[in-house]
Image 1: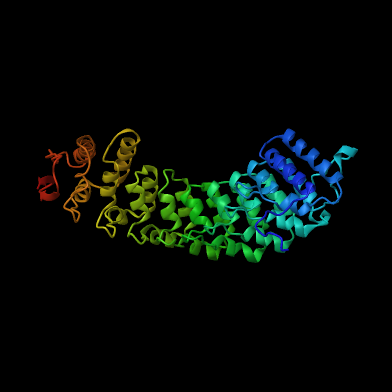
Image 2: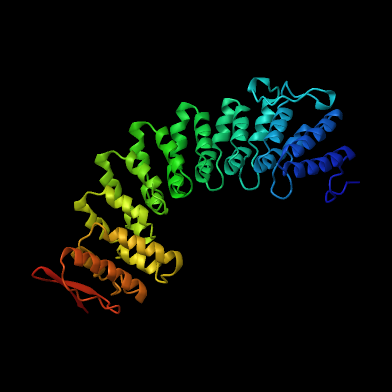
Length: 430
């Protein structure tokens, strides 16, 4: 008689008991603090008193919810003491002893002391349901001590596997650390790479073509940007700065979308003087420059830094740049801030001031009077209040430069043109 195959596999009492204990251990690993670590240690001590304990099941069986093991759970929580204990137990380190018998478990993670490095590597490099390893979770949460423990417990080949593992988005541990902005962790990971692998790691691209530098720039991680640029050899740094993602964005373009200007300054300083203008004039696949992004998003401080990096002769051309949709950056700024309230009002005013600063009155009028393909000018989509502010800035400059009586722009104008009359400039409304 054949046995039914549809029935669940019968488990021994020992297996069922271990499953229950592992569930309790998972709960303890989700807690921070020494009390939780002591509780885990006592439970492991009791387990190891039993004969023939299934170490594979203990250290490598995942929880049902997110497929995390005990180690990935502890790394997510950031309990360094629990991580140390699990590493020593799983790798059967020579310093791991039964604390209930009076000895104290040492916290050294020297690789020479592990007698089961293969199982230890499997536990460290285990991948959960989200495609993340223990190292990645520690990088994500910013746990430097845990990262050092994990990397210190792996031989060269297994360490390389841990460092090069990719998530579903092709993110590595280095990219995750760069995104979350911990420069110390980025240094630790870079130092863990062999010299021949470090350059490849820095230039590794995710599914969108982002390198570590682009990720750090996009998330405004100034200190990380510094560390990454310093890690490049002089001959490779410019290539990294000019790298484009799938949308054609460079590190400078990514950083220009952030409100703060510190990362922009670091990137510009890293560009050789002869290549700086080229970097500022580079365009993405939408035909936009770094300055275009900064203006359109209302990042006034970034606009000031970018304009100051341009030669005076090129500033007007950069401000007047037109993207592939036929728009200028000032029009994009006005469209984005049409409501002109709250924080948008502050950003709008600061950006207009920064944009107008290097321009003469006639140059300002020329930019405002540019008519797009839909027949609109920069002033068309914004409110009366915002138009009045723009006109105040325009007239203030005119009074300082020409001391002339000006005809104000109509708040309902769809286009503005400029006519020269001796030393005065007059607006013609159409």
